[in-house]
Length: 408
Image (cartoon, rainbow, N blue to C red; front, side):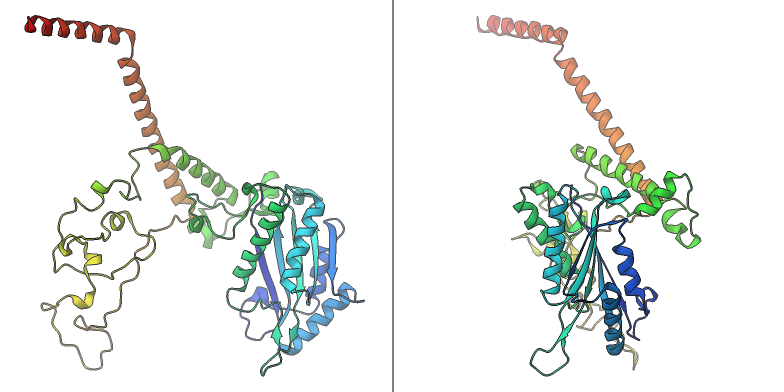
């Protein structure tokens, strides 16, 4: 099954860069090229528009140009390849994305890693693109071809990679289960907790039974446990949630939109002068907001306080209307009262202790569901047993005889 993994990093000579890991140094680019193209890991290396330069010469030239303009030396990508494809298809897929990224003008080098160790199960390719700046014919600075410094550039190229990947997989005859998406589970509407990236180094340490020591500053998050232990918890939680979907008594965090009789028609009337809020929809709502959301044709006193009106429409006679001079804070009587923030459903945080609480809650809920199913099955079996059927037939005969006597 194909997986989506799209990682981007950059090294820059900009004096405004405050992130230590992004600061470029002379010789870093050449060292990175030697690492990704090493014969022990790279099955295939593709270069484009390098001319007669070697990797060392091209990297040094790119660093010198970046140092002059105090910009980026190169753009680095690590992108997962589908494990179900052939080596030739992987090379075609990687080069297709590289050509789209560089627009056939900038130079790049990519190395496909899928022949040794963990790379066999997790094929991927490293891509290093060297940006160029071209004049557009108008006033202003020369424009970047890659444009990775622009807003939301990484998100756009991640979406582009997913589109190229899915198109190629469809052309090669793979089904929809091999498609990938750059969106999160929440945006895709998938009710699952995403797992945490472990990495080959972390897995190899656990295989050698050498557990890493926890950091004190991370104690609040991981409780001194490894990512592998957290992922085992997450997998168990996802399995339990799938099994408990059929529970008719599970209504936590959900609305009654499937039952109109319970979705607002039986709500008690609200006071007309109750505390108002911002009208309209604000993304994900909680179960109470969903159950009492605004409906067409409902009276004003049937609306919940958060849909009844704005704060500016409410009278604050008991709060007073005077404020101190020079006080810039909005008064309660001001018509420019700021809107309330949107009400959103809290997401599940991947803290180890919270995962344990959620796992135990789901276990109890699933145990209750199993007991309900067992009791229901026993009741149905008892009703349809031969002894009960014989008794029901005898009672039916007695009733028929009684009716016959009454009619006579």
